[in-house]
Image (cartoon, rainbow, N blue to C red; front, side):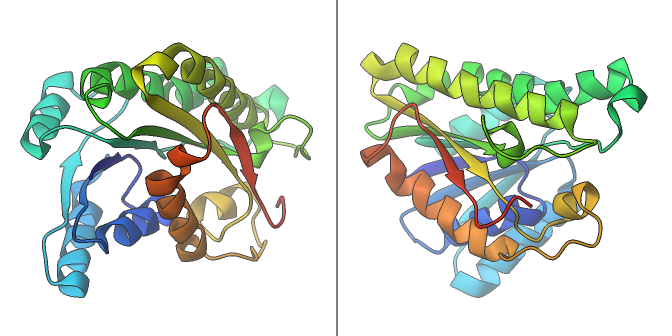
Length: 234
C-alpha cells in the first residue's frame, strides 16, 4: 500500500506518518515544506521499526514544481491513498484579515489539495483501493461551534469539506473513495495558535493513530462523508 501524506513535518501529520509506517506492507511518502524535520521523521521510523518505510520530499503546495512530485510518486510506484493533511491557520479578527491572509489560507487548505488530486488522479484510478482523505476541522463543519479570529481558516476548511462531497460523486465510477475528517481539538502547534493556553483532551499521537486507521480502512465503509472526529471543539 502506497500512501502520500502532506504536512508531515509536525503535529498530527507527523504522527499519522509514523503510525502508517508501523505496517511493513506500507510505503509512506511524507511531504512538507522543510526537509530537516522530514529527515528526522524518516530516521525515527527507521530506528523504531527497523526498516525504511518512510521516504520524504520537500515540497511546497503553493510553489514547488510539479515534476519533482511526479518523479517521487513514480519512484514509489504509484499512490493508493492520498492524505491531504497540510493546513495553514492565521488567527486574526475579521476586520484585520487582509486579502493576502485569505488567499494564503485558501491556497494551502483548498487549492493545495485540488492540485495534488489533479496530479495524482492517473495513479489513484489505477489502484484497487484508492482513498482520498481530506483533513478538515470542526471549524469548517456545518452547525459546529465557531470562534472569533478563525473566519478565513474555517471558511477554507468548509470549502474542502464540500469539495469532498463533490469529488466522491464525480469519482465513484472510478472506484476512488473520497472522505473528509473534521478534526476537533488535539494538542498541536496549530491548536496553540488558534487557542493559546488551551489543553486539548487528545494528543497529536492519539489523533494520528485514528487518522492512520481511517486512511487505510475507511474507504470500505464510507464515501463522500464528512465525519466529525471530536471530543471537544476546542
